[in-house]
Length: 302
Image (cartoon, one colour):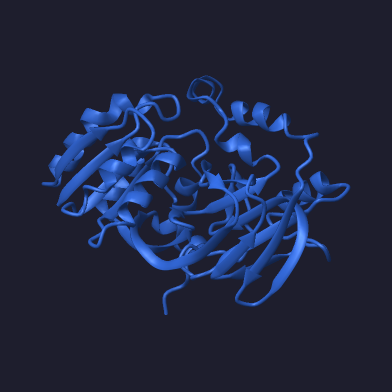
């Protein structure tokens, strides 16, 4: 097997660099040809992924942002390699969803010894792609508006400190949502479009989301008093909490018309501003996953 190893050496605490030689040796034991590429700046992983159509596998070591860059590159290829993921970031939501932990040696053993390959849905938002979440409004800037140095030395605390600045900030986002099943308008403070059941390290275990069911979940939190409490209850109940004004619904397509200055992030990375169209690209990319996550994260095979 021909493997392209895309590694972000600055991801998380940077400990992945001490494993690079060991990883290469493990792959060679299985007669795989592995080529290492280290990223140095934003978009490096994306540009390298564009060159992987001749590879059988892309092994990614980095956080959710690095993986997002790789996915955006791979989605432009006609012949797409299988993705294997070593989560080394601070939060690693995608790694959790597919059962890949930060323990590098254990993850490599899962990838090499008895790999389980599943096709994941990828969501297209305007001209870009995401794996598990797109968001706008309150708290969402804290996922990308943090220096790499802060994340490295403070870990999750860096996100908490940045998010605390948003507590008393008012977000006034007029939206018109059009889907296959409904149209509605409201003024929102926070919008979440979810393909998985985890955001910012918090599990939404009561959502019906599967990574290969062809659907996304949309939750808009109305701008009103006690909005922060409603968000807290939503996460505390694992996504179960609904009210008459705030409900989660699922579809394969959403169009959200809003102001030009509304900022969006995808998989924790800044995407752009303004109105968006989002659709599911069903089972678009093959991932190696931990078999222990098959029941929770994927549709049951018939």
